Length: 424
Image 1 (cartoon, helix red, strand yellow):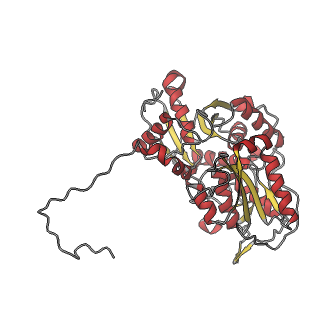
Image 2 (cartoon, rainbow, N blue to C red):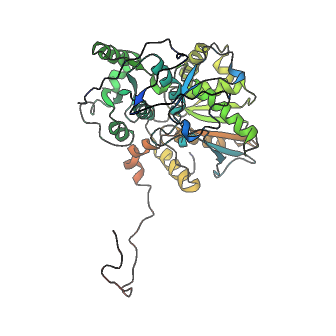
Image 3 (cartoon, rainbow, N blue to C red):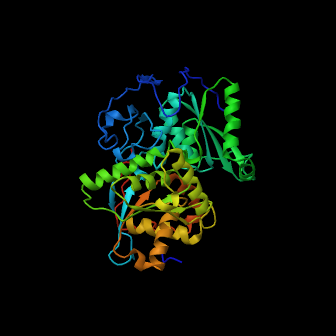
C-alpha cells in the first residue's frame, strides 16, 4: 500500500469515399464559415501549428520511420493544441537518481482535453471523406472519449450520437449533468443509455451497428468510431505523438532522452501508437502501460490486432509491457487510489483523473516502492492522458479527504461602513 428527446438536423450530404483517404481537393464542411484547407509541405505537421490553423484540414505526411506502415492516412484535422508541454514532475519518494517527467496531453484543449483528440484528428478526417453527416461512438457513462467526440463533431458541424454504459438501476433515468455528461449535453449530443449487463451480452460493435442501421433508415449517413477511438486509423494519433516527443527532445529545451514511457491503457489505441512509433523511431524508449480494465493479455491481443491492421510486422509482446492496474474495476476507485490522487495534487499541483492516469501513476509509484533497484537512475516520461471532468463523478467519494477551509476571523474592532466593499 502506498503512503500516500432531441431533434435531428440534417446536413448537406457529401460523396462517399474510401477509408483513410480524401479527395485531392476536399470539399469543405460549412458551419457559418468554411473551414480553410491548409496545404502543408513540412513533415513536422503538428510541431509548429499557429492558432490560424485550428479546425483546418491538412494533408498528412508520416514520419520517415513510419512510412512503411499501411495504410497511411492522407489527411487530418487540426483539433488539438500541440505540441503539449513536457516538464519535470517532482513526485516524492522516488528511487535513487530516478527522474519522472510529465507529458501534458491533459492540456491538448479545453472541452477536448486528453489523449482522444490525437485520434479524432484522423478519425474525423476519414468521416468527412466518407461523406458522413453524423458520428456514432460508445463508452462508459463518464467516457472522456465520448465527450471529446461530441465536441469535435460539433466543431465540424456533425451530429453526434453517444451510446453510454451505465448501471441497470440508472438506465431508465436522466443521466444528469455531472462531468463529461454536462459537456456532451451542452453541445447537443444525442444520448442512448444501455446497462452494463446488456453491454456485456451484446458488445460494443453490435450496439453501434444497431444504431447505425437505424440512422441509415432515417436517411442519415453515420460514421462509427469504436470505443476510445482505438482502431488502426486512430493509432496514428500516437504515432504522431512520438514524432512530437522526438522533436521536443532533439530540438526543444528538454535536451534529454528517456529510458521509459509510462501511460494508462483503457482501450489500446494510445499504447499501440506509442509502442510501434517508439520501436520504429530513433527514440527507442521502453513503453510500459498500466491497464485500467480487462487484463494485460486482452490488451496484448487487442494491440496486436491494431498493429496487424497497419502491417507493422511486429509482436506486441516485444514492444510494450502491459501491467494490471484496474483495482476494483473500470472507473471504480479504492480509498487508497483516491488518497494518492489527492496527495499528488497537493504535492505537485498536477490533478490526475481517477479512472486512467490516476491508476497508472498509482501503479507506477507502487512499483517504485516495491522494486526501487529496477528503477534507479532511470529517466521516465509519464503521459498524462487527461480526463479531469471524470473526477467530478468521484466528488462524494473524495469529499472526506478535503479540508482547507474556515470562516475568516474578523475582529470586532475592524470598522464596518455600509457600501465600503462594492460587489458590483
